[in-house]
Length: 72
Image (cartoon, rainbow, N blue to C red; front, top):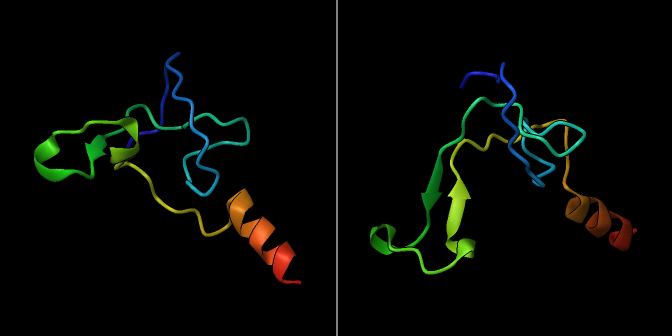
């Protein structure tokens, strides 16, 4: 995947993605969006996924942080 070098902005709220910067912006030049449903006949946005996602081992989502805090 290429890092972006133009004025394009892709907003993202997936904190655990290694391409998501501190401001909620994807650092990639382009992303691939796919569908989790049968035969790519999506009926709602919940069925779509960013196929460019790669987990950043150094980042954890806020949900993970909350679960850890609740466990302690």
